[in-house]
Length: 223
Image (tube, rainbow, N blue to C red; front, top):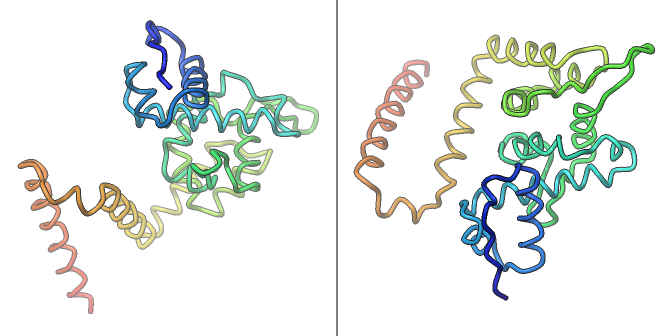
């Protein structure tokens, strides 16, 4: 089925754009690329907006936290589904476009919702989508930091400090995290993508090999 042409979408807000993406994909499109051609953004961005809208919709349908869901929270879900670490923590799947980890999903909803502690009303812990979701990827790697984050009397910055202190005091954790991220990034394009590298890709690969060689020397010296 042919998709109607849409003009002026760039002037729309992020939430309105995402709702249109969902409407077009669910009603008329066979893939994200088909939608992307009609609204002038990349298929990857169409996918992110679709996932974010579906994630927000899941909160809207939550019995406990649905009342706190609103379009203004869209940016938090957009950042969350765009972050591999946070997406993995939520166990967000492209099969159902939902966050499957109930415990972590509930924690995320709590962070987005106002609370009351000893009769004092408090604003949601998450206030800045761009900055705090980037910081969340550090926190979700630390059970101790997550416990602090879940404590209604503790702030987001309290949890972040615990996670950062833990990383600084545990060099092995830092190196393991760096290696995991490097492996994930290198595997993402797929083996076939490396068969015809650009000149710049080859240059960067040589630089990376030098780093590998330096690390090898350090590891061999410790044996």
